[in-house]
Image (cartoon, rainbow, N blue to C red; front, top):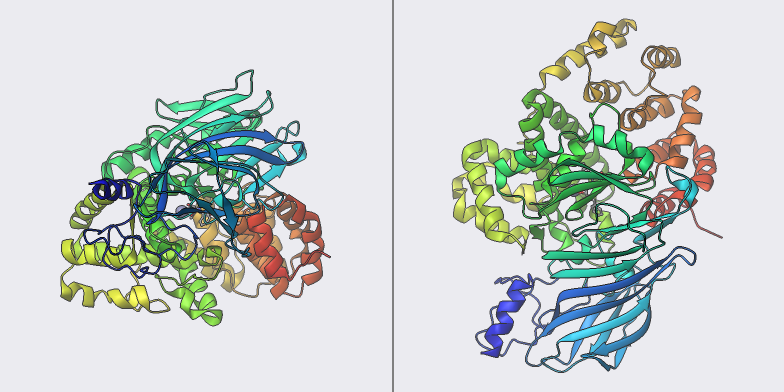
Length: 629
Ligand code: BES
Ligand code: ZN
């Protein structure tokens, strides 16, 4: 009986029932015949939820800007197997002060430290233990946290803190079972300086209070990579009765203007794949050092200010993070090897939202840019690491961050688009809606998804026809990559042709109607070598170097660097020093290195590095061969 209750709760906690278990060494319940609860082995956690698993967190924290640390108690509700002797947590650089089990001091020990995984913490328990309470402080090893000085914010007056937990950095600020397959609900109490507000991936306050004490509730279970906290001088403005925007006061109006279509997007998403499961959908615009474009923290997407173009042209990113509310946050990749299930689905869903809200000819421009980028990137990754061009990745023993490439995103997208084109949109939509409904608050493996498709969507013939196995398990891009036809880009191609042939600039009447995406296509289509005079003419006519659009600027840096177009240099430097978004940093530094500008790259990096979040810093250190003396 007890065992049955446990099985149910493991299920509720998000531990997958599945037949492909290869984890028997870890599985303490294996003799118990009726056991079907099996956990998909996740190489990036030390936790063994079959023995003991967390179900709910009460987090009580003080944010100390002066000492740049969080002091906290993580009070975990747990569930144990009948033979449990210990519960294992992931920790990384945490200073553990005190450990209690059901209110009494408990023995605990640590395993060896691993540079990527951190240290397992084993806490002695007996079967039936209910609560584990861990008091601790974060250290400067907390790679999830970025403590910003006032100068790094828009307001320049108050410091700022934000977290980035995905993929395995939650353990650097909370002792947790840090696997996408382990979900828990949470409540939190967070004390911050009284002039600031705290926000989490939970039900959030709509404004500051005078005490600096904030309470949070997250009633839906989430995996720890979705734990998030932001603290700063931030205000809120609603967009609709269930969507809104948080930003520093001086950025708020611009942000609200940019995100006017938020409610439309949520409605489009719901129309496609079912009700939004998380209540409120808000976005917080962070300072520019945020290392990503966006992060799908439930109820509160974290976003880079570099999408505030002033003309709403970069809101596909919002559609993307919103889409994760289904793909990723509801149905979650079982391990980081299945990352394409999070990101490929999300790019597909993002495209569909964009098509719904802005029309097919608009969304096909996005698809075309994506396709070109995929072909470029796959070739590049394939040279060094062909294995990493498979949809199903093998990241064991590596930092899962290494799997964050165009492959899971864009190869994943085109694989799903191929399936849509094969079975027809209507059928595919019905299938996807049911998929999200069936697996909500659970995990999915690549194999589980293939099986589900075989049962519910694709005949054996169709699986062969689309080359399903090749898409998922072979490197490179299969020859049936869907083709994208963008009429609007055909016009851009023509403009490019005459520019190359006779240097004639595309006419103002034409470019006045161009969106950001036409410009990106135009710039990306420039030949490898272009006369500096021609670049100067373009720059003069269309103000490319000093554009306020971050995507256009970053694209423009490529031909500028390739061809030694010096007038762009100071803008490049300024951009790299102020923006920490890795997607822009990597190609720009790379272009400098590839074009004999190592000295310039290193000079800029010396200045810029202190501004970067650890996630970007680690990638750039490696790219530039930088080491701190
Ligand atoms: N979840 C990702 C960001 C991420 C992935 C962080 C892996 C850490 C590890 C987020 O949804 C994302 O994909 N962001 C993109 C947005 C883009 C594809 C629209 C980004 O940041 O550029
Ligand atoms: Zn994403």
